[in-house]
Length: 314
Image 1: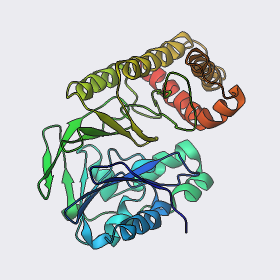
Image 2: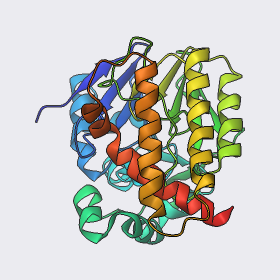
Image 3: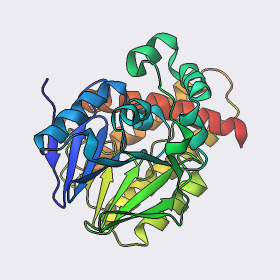
């Protein structure tokens, strides 16, 4: 088994979760004096990659003290039950609104099957293992823990999902952002740096809350953002502006189609894709539109579904 890992310094290792393919979803290991926190879990299929990454550092699942999905969407938490089963010394830290769904994942499974369909769900995630409630810690926006002497601070960050928090690591001055700080794929390159855009997947997208959550994260003046999708980026003013622009444009595209009942998801998807391809041109991307569209296609499809669901609530 070959895994892709990246040493990011400060005892932080990125492990490619191989979510369908490489370079889509990351799991982060934080190691401090032989104790480990795992941020995000990927899916059940990601667990062997995490194990191998630990063994490469002369560690094992016995060294894992905390398992911390930023929210309970299954590309972030689908492997939590299996990891907890194998990491006998670990506690799970999860948002209070998400805890019950990992203790009893039946509704989470049903909701995800409604989005993906039964066949694709089983292929991507397998069977979600429930977690003993006695091993679950619910973390609100005032929660802090120490990994040995290393402090991790939690921020409640709704907008992508109500059950979402982000984790600030004081030692690296970095934030593990889940989906709050958007998506940025390193395989798309431009003269002006990374393309960063919002993820609006079903079913709790709220643009106002998401913009406020981004401001909350930026207020602590982080030096690096550890994105689940995908990798470490520097949160420059231009990056923040670009991310916020995508939230507003996606929302406006959807609102302009509010009275279009037929094929609305498809039209939203076409228009938000066209918007991002135009942004890439503005940023000096020399890769073909066809290639860039192939990289963002899955996100655009799910974003369109999430925007359509949001419209039904507006």
